[in-house]
Length: 227
Image 1 (cartoon, rainbow, N blue to C red):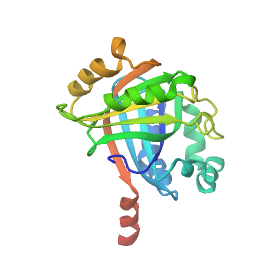
Image 2 (image 1 turned 30 degrees about the horizontal axis):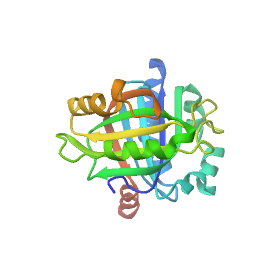
Image 3 (image 1 turned 135 degrees about the vertical axis):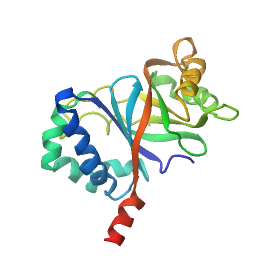
């Protein structure tokens, strides 16, 4: 499976331009490493929007979804660092989804990520999942590396002690790992957005994001060993 683990935390937000430099320093010099260091976290990837909103997106892979309800993770939520306590209340248009990775096809990851946010009909989840299984096949698609489905857990998603505003906790997310913006845009139009949106679901939004950087647990472990 191209995505590491079976669980994922997706967060996305905007930030005022006046706070943006400090926000990026916080992510780059504290927050990503702090989260990846938690037991059961595997890696994190940071993105910035090429086309779409909110502007910033982060994906945290975990061994299972249960890691995102574990005592170790809950302790971090309950006891944020001073920098986190200052930064997180500045988030705007916050999305927070704790999800299971239920479909993941292809091999590897791309420097460009397409995302489609879907609101499924609660009584037709199996039908939607079956429809997406075929659409999430990257075989013979130029520039498409892999594709994935995240199914949010409504109980675990949404607001936390750190983040008091985060909406639509039961939405699903299609992720498209690709090598170019044009490859993502063409595929979104052909399979996932507008008249091609999968039924039974409502398309909430879509976007295309550029990878900023990623961090794996092994990177942190190597730093500790070298130190």
